[in-house]
Length: 209
Image (cartoon, rainbow, N blue to C red):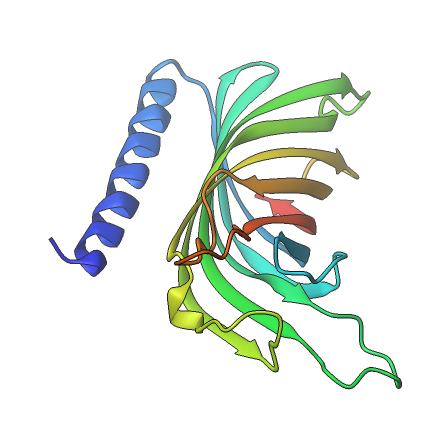
């Protein structure tokens, strides 16, 4: 079984599972909603000697929410996500260090709602769940702390997530989310003990149809 086949098999299974959830809820006359989201990521990597959330990137894609009760949804998203790490650039720095990682990300989470407004929508939503990401492009620029090739990065990433959303109205929301990897981005061979673990913040806007 090739890596490419395993990637698409996992994606297919995730979509089938969520489709089954939506179908089961639909039989109970509960609704589900689709939406679009777009925003920014701020990321860093523990173990790479580059401190701070200095690596900014873009994120965006599709989301689907299935009502499981009046105040709870199950959510699925398919996103493009830019992550990595970057040193602070200044006039006195000789080296500019950059790790650029691009993923397809699939978060699955429970979405809890609170603060019912007079217009009959919930102002605050809170998310907790897991996310699977697949690395499809990577690059290192002037990276001198370790001898590393971008091809050595782990292509698959599993992380846990926590987030919150504020709905301006029934359709538009702004959100913040934190992801931290459960898997290692890079596990160096030999005596090097600096194991890399990625984490990132996301700030985005969503439109729910």
